[in-house]
Length: 169
Image 1 (tube, rainbow, N blue to C red):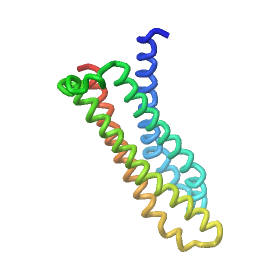
Image 2 (image 1 turned 60 degrees about the vertical axis):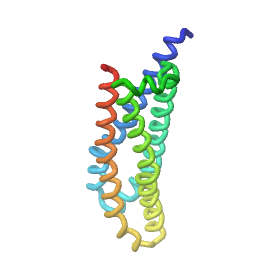
Image 3 (image 1 turned 45 degrees about the vertical axis):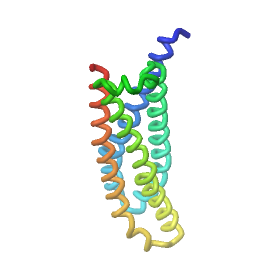
Image 4 (image 1 turned 30 degrees about the horizontal axis):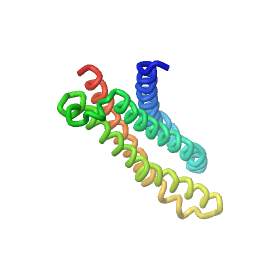
């Protein structure tokens, strides 16, 4: 495979996985969470318990793939090897800021969203066992997940703007 084809493929997969990552965050926050709120509480908890773990795993894998292909793309273009020179350009600054934000967003998903979702799953399981006291946690957990979803959307939009700026710089 010619080197340019490999580089193009890596860049394409980086962009595709990034679009899927941020698109998933937008979908969950703007479509799915508002729809789940319309369900009766017992059904809502079961739906979130069924969907949440799969979605967070999907989103985290997309984040890892996006970041990994971004690093590989920087290596294949030779820009990582010439880091000092690269950081002296608009392209370098926008990519560096975007990469820092992407890693920060990944950490937020791992440390904020994932634990909240798995706490909802634990509450769902406990409520099926008869422990209804833990259901009182759900409004706070829902608000935390929603707020973090909006943060992901905002940071994701900034990252996309940075990547477009880098592309055309």
